[in-house]
Length: 180
Image (cartoon, one colour):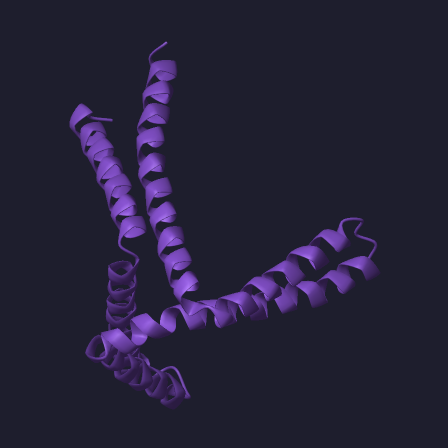
């Protein structure tokens, strides 16, 4: 790999780490940016679905549901972009509900694992209950959920940045082994 490519990967990693720190330090702005990004992605998804529907209409039957889905995505994307404040405020609640529902599903699934003889089924049960409880707590205090969500986004971005830098070190090691 070229040295310039490695330098760019390291710069990208450092910038991602800095962005992660900014996300952790500015939770409200992180939620607004996340809401804006979700709006853009939903809008582009809807446009792509409509283009796909029109181009495949002749040989894929039942394109009406895909067209409806594309139109709804476009409408939702426009709502997200036009009402960024509302979406940013609702993200912690949506996240908390998602964590709660997933926790309940994991807890219920643990009994299926028990039925098939999986010895660690109780671990899934405990994790599922913990997720459900954390989701409920998140619904009770959305401000804490918002800060937590921003922190998790920031940590995820930091980890990606570190991953880029570690990947450069791995490429260097791989290149050294190949040259031997």
